Amino acid sequence: MLSEALLERLTATPLFAVALTLAAYLVAMALLKRLGRPPWLPAILLATVLLTGALVLTGVDYTAYQDGARWLTVLLGPATVALGMPLYQLLPRIRQLWRPLAVCLPVSAVMAIVYALGLAWLMGAPPEIIASLAAKSVTAPIAMGIAEQIGGNVSLLLGALLITGVAAIAFVSLVARLMDITDERLIGFALGVNGHALGTVRAFEIGPTAGAFASLGMSLTGIFTALLLPLAWQLLS
Amino acid sequence: MPALNGFLWLLLCWLAGELIVYYTGIPISSGVIGMLLLGGALAINGGVPDSVAAAAQPLIAMLAMLIMPGVTGVFFMIDELAGQWTAIMLSLVVGTLLSVFTTLWLLKRLMQDDHAE
Image (cartoon, rainbow over all chains, first blue to last red; front, side):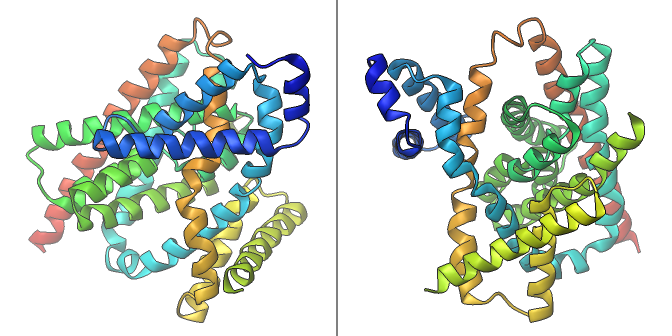
């Protein structure tokens, strides 16, 4: 733990929070390279565990850290807009596959929400938690916008995203084996729709076709959910 | 300075998203609207200008780092959510299993129908 006076000085500017974040991220990346990138350990999980450890060790309060890190998180706006570029690059594939996509995407994206929220509701979870879990299958930058719209807790949502991504990676390979599916297109698409960015990273490890279909599934699920979920939420409550 | 030029385009799309949200009150985040505007603008342009690629690529590569401050928050909520963890974990894990099954089952049927035609 650092002394009170030193902490006060360090957290007076955003620089300390930014340096901690960059350091934790880069150390996590270097560690993962050494470990051979195991699929059950997403980079973001290791990076945030390291960051949490650093905050606890230095004695920086989370809210003070969050204030400083706002200097980084403000970039989420333009980074979300930047996703329009890969979306544009996917257009030819969307045109080519519009028929199965038009049926499967809305059903899958809606059911991903309905199953999770139904289960949470049955188990008596309070409304704020249910709102935080709603965007669990959507890629993080888009999901954060949705959670803010419907009144969920962004940190809980991001934790839910991590768990969902890891579960989707495990279940897609399990269910595909049980159903005797070997088509990379199907596996990739299921990874992207249900497992957002984590699933997409996994799909690229399987192969470029799986990766391309996962990107497609992830982008379309994100857009579909962002356009409809907040509206549905407003109408239902 | 192509990257700065491209960054300004990203900010302008985001700003347009903010204006649309402000004037229409639609419940969609300004970033998502900006993303759709950028995708549309690129489609009209018929390609990705180097400046936009130079700004967009590093930002997309940095996304994991940009969400780190938010994800870290969940570790500081563990006590606050005591008693809710079973419901949260179960709905996420079982919900994901069910939705993975639904997606694969639907896709298998749809893609087979495609072959049959």
